Every structure is written in C-alpha cells, then in structure tokens.
Amino acid sequence: MIGYAVSFLLGLGVGVGGLYLMLRRHRAALPAAVEESVTAFGEEVAALEFDVKGPDATPAVLKEYRAALAAYDRASAARREPDALTALRDGRAAMIRLDARLHGRPVPIDALPPAAGPGRPQPLTGTGERYVYTGNGFGETEVLIDRPEPGRPALVEVDVTDGEDETLFEIKTMTRTEDLTKIGDTLLSAPYEYHGRRYLPADATHLLVDSWSGRRWSIRVAPLSAATALAPEHRGHGNEVLRYDGGPAVLTVQFEDNEIWEVRYVCQCLRSRSACDCRLPAWPEDTPGDNDWSVDAYDLRDGRNTLRLPRPGFLVIDCVVGSWYLTTQPVEIPPASPPRRWRRR
Image 1 (cartoon, helix red, strand yellow):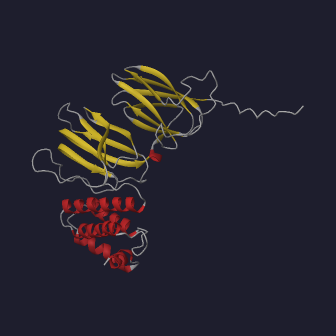
Image 2 (cartoon, one colour):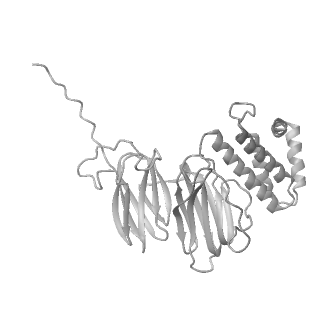
Image 3 (cartoon, rainbow, N blue to C red):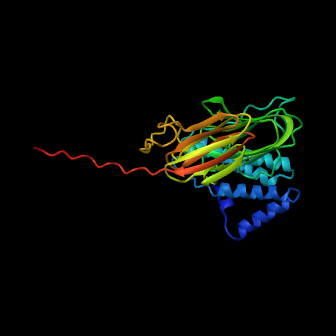
C-alpha cells in the first residue's frame, strides 16, 4: 500500500500533470491559495528520501508515513476549505513527527482534544501555507511548530491586529513531547496591535497563543539566517532579532522606552550561555563593557549601555513598544604573543 502511494506521487511526465489537473478540477470550489498549499504538500511528501524497507522503517516511523499519505489524500479530495486545512495540518504534523523519529529528536505530540464551550481553539484560518499560522477570536490556541531547520533555533515574526481593548495578547513557548510536557517562557506579551520578531529556542515544540480580546494574529517561522543584518548604525522599534556578521566589536545601545528593555547576544554556535565554550577574544584593557560572558545589556526606561560582541552571532532585542539606536565599533585584537623559548645554560 505504501509503495503504491509513493510511486503514484512520484510518477513523471503526463501522469503527474494529469494527477494535479484532476485534483484542481475536483477542488475548484477551494481558494487558489489553498489549492496551491495542497499541491505543495503533495510535493513535500513525494520528496521524502525514505526507504520503507530500510532499517529506519520502524513501526512508529511507518505509522507517521502512512498518516502523511492519508492526510494528502484527504486534502486532495476535500471540497470544503476547513476540511482541506484540517488535512494539511494533520499531514504536516505527521511529517514533523516522522522527521523527529528519523533523526532521534524528541517527538512532539498533539494537545488533548479541546472540551466544548468557551476557550476552545478557534476554527482553522489562513491558506495552509507552510510555516505560517493564523487565527482570530477568543481563547487559547496551541500551535505545533514546523521549523525550516528542524532541531535549531528559529525566527518568529508576529502580527496582531484588531484588538478591542488593552487586554494582553500572549505567546508562550511550550514543550509537549512523548516524554515531557511543560510551559516555557513568555515569548510575547502585547496589549496593543503589534508587529515584531522574536527568537525561538530550539527546545520548544509548540507555541501557546492566548488571545482574550478578539484579535487577529499571524505567526511566520523562518530560519535565523533570515534575520536582518546589523548595520554599523541601526535604528528600530519594538522587538527584533538581528544578525551580526562581524568580528570583535563594542555595541552601544540607546533606548527610548517606558518599560524594561534588554539586548541579548547569542553566539553563532547557538548554544545557551552556560553551554557555549567558544573562546573569548583577548579584549584590550580599555575596551568598554564587562570582561566576561555578560552578554546582556539592559536598563529601565530611557537608557544607554554597552555590550561586547566577540564574534558573529545574533542580537535579541526585547522592547515591546520603545525605539532604539545601535552603533557598532570594531575592536582591534592584538596578536597573541609567541611562546617564550627557554635556553639551556
């Protein structure tokens, strides 16, 4: 059954063209963007490099593989947009679990089915585009994260509109796997309309979206490499993630804000501060900033501070509504002295 489905999807020439034309005629009532998402998902499944008779084809792996194929069949046969979106969601969840099992990562699982009544997740919206999640209305929504680079930190771009009042809109990271369930840090807490980018840690498997003010929201997940490059003079507003491509430098940060703000440096190794064992530069004694792994600059309200950047990495700016100005000054690191040779007498 599996081999037949794979060969059916991977057929070439007239066979594939006829398949997609047939499906598009069958889904004529669906929006064009949803049709494109169904076709793209079929191509994702077809592109899997997976041997169903190989040593990795355990019963658990084959179960996820069958679920992905079945979801594609459901999406292809759907006549209603909600049915197609539900099938796409289920299919991509199966693909995420399949990839995790094949690469030995913790396997994310779905939340328990919601109870009836207020607070249950809102109906699926959006177009089914990969890495994009949308919603509106009231209550909590748990989003399974599909990462462009599985197992690595990511960039999350969030847009929130149409708020009825100043009730907070919140996003928290969450880990929900076969072995562990825990709610992590607050990724975002915004009382108004919002646009910004946040740093998504590698260990989070879900996003818990909490909207109690009837707002529309969208979340797009991108690789960290998509972050905007830090310029020598860089102005901005609100939360942001910037990519630093230079060598040792001193970053001067200036903020206009009425809340606490913070700028955090993340090393290019993408490990946590406690796990990073990258060697620090031999900073000259007169270099501004702390001479250790103090990788944060922070203050309350309007403020100014300095931060040492030892090597390429990323800057995570926590500032919901304030404005900021960053300047970067390279630091010349003197070459290491050659080892002293001792002569015998």
